Amino acid sequence: MIRKLYHGSSDIIEHPRFGYDKRYNDYGLGFYCTDSLEMAKEWGVSPDRSGYANCYELECDGLQILDLNSAEFCILHWLAVLLENREFDVPSGLALDAKEYILANFAVNYQEYDAIIGYRADDSYFSFAQDFINGTISYRQLNNAMHLGKLGQQFALKSRKAFNRIQFIGYEIADREEWYTKKMLRDKSARREYFDVERNRRQRGDLYITRIMDEEMKADDSRLR
Image (cartoon, rainbow, N blue to C red):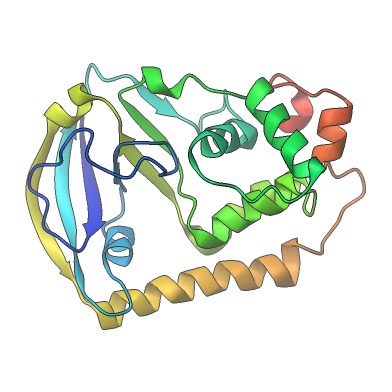
């Protein structure tokens, strides 16, 4: 199966290089793409420059692809991968305990896969995850927050095998004035919805990280589905 992918960047990248990227991305070292041309254009711009949406085709047959949004996983599996790779602010004993508990009980052997599909932790979405491990929002609210702003998902190439399969087919220019404005509007929309609706909308029976830890909930707990 051929999958069309896009990568937003300040550069035209005809040959993505295996092992050449930031180690502290969401899923570690890899080449991060999206199925959305529009999203790639947003990712490719900055406040002071235009960029590019690089376009690719990837032959997926024979690749081991981990989909963190599939039914066999819950949001805590995604969070466990994030905790392994991103630097979280853990200002309290609760946050440290939460981090250790999630890593101990929801870890995923993601390094065995050629590629990973999952949420992208932009600044606003990363802050939602931090609020959860700090006990500020519930499990339900975290799940809902990840859909605010319609960020969508990312596709990260992890293995040399996957890098050998990707083919550059062209690019589109992302104009800074148009796409940076859209990028900021998406982020502001997510944050506004979060603070206006989700962050303060507690419901009876909500699961907070303290309860998840106290009751020693595991990945097969139906309350986490």
